[in-house]
Image 1 (cartoon, rainbow, N blue to C red):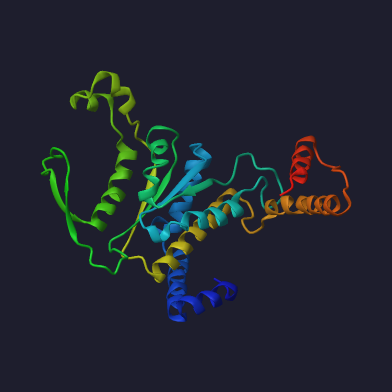
Image 2 (cartoon, one colour; image 1 turned 180 degrees about the vertical axis):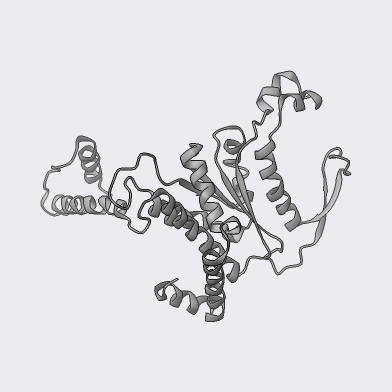
Length: 293
């Protein structure tokens, strides 16, 4: 949001685009400050996060945008959320009686479906946020095409004519329902699934998720999304009573790295032996230094 980022981005994308991005963030700022708590998006997301992690014990959260252009958005949220709320003491310095912060990860929905969705449906319970858009971001005409689904589904014909964006969004709508309702053993019996496969195809359901449906992905929407998730992080920090605005945990490794750099310099230049490290790190450093390319 600062000039350090806005200046290079404005030179690359134009100031008009970045002005729209800032306007989107400001729109959510006003919403966060003015909207009643019952309809306040960052507050509701923050409350859900605290409920799922602190009370339900679900310490991981998945962010699943159904847009390839937002494929790096989960990593951005991961950075500021885990950096801000990964704390062990209150803002007053007292040890917490619970664990704060969540493990954030995610991927564009179409890619994630072929990697970790298996775990979401039949493994660990991971609360998920789905993000979708009513309009395709592509400026190319999204031609309709025919898919031939075998058989019929709930009275619909097997042959379906839909656009590529509609096909993508079909998964956006279906996946949260699959997480919520799953599939029971009795459902599989009615579907005549072979008995030896039934337990393998049971989906427990009752897995929490939230869905955010926006009109279209543009600079304004990106600003809104970023502000929503930043405010959500702050809300959770306020509830946990921690200081979300320090990052001492990012410093300890960097400080220790100074000693490693000094050791590498001494060993490279003067042949100094490795010393002052634990046995594991010392062994790895010796192996590293002994390698010659």
